[in-house]
Image 1 (cartoon, one colour):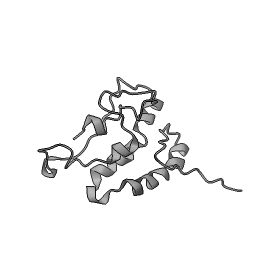
Image 2 (cartoon, rainbow, N blue to C red; image 1 turned 90 degrees about the vertical axis):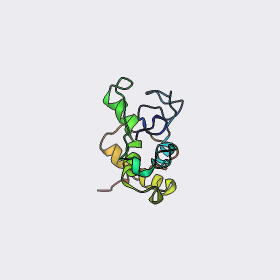
Image 3 (cartoon, rainbow, N blue to C red; image 1 turned 90 degrees about the horizontal axis):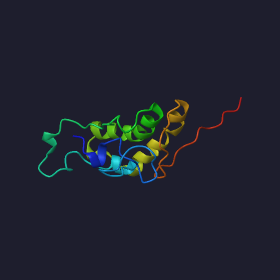
Length: 128
């Protein structure tokens, strides 16, 4: 299952996002995380869903920094949706865990979208 209004990673986060499209929806990090494949579409039950897909159509973004920006930080949330029961997911708890990845994304040189909905942790200064 890959609903465009929830899982297309080439959809802009909001109206200020400089890459991507918004024909299906603006998909902020919370909207990307808060949905249940088993209840999203009437007539489609849990038994009918084999998994989820979060596509990024490369005709809308073609440079790696653009791809990273559109994928991160949504990708970890999609993975959690695919691997965790809806009853085990909680946005308020998840956004704290996601915020802890900020220093990791930075250290890896990932050009990620710093959503204002997430309190991003900063890398602690180390004294030598």
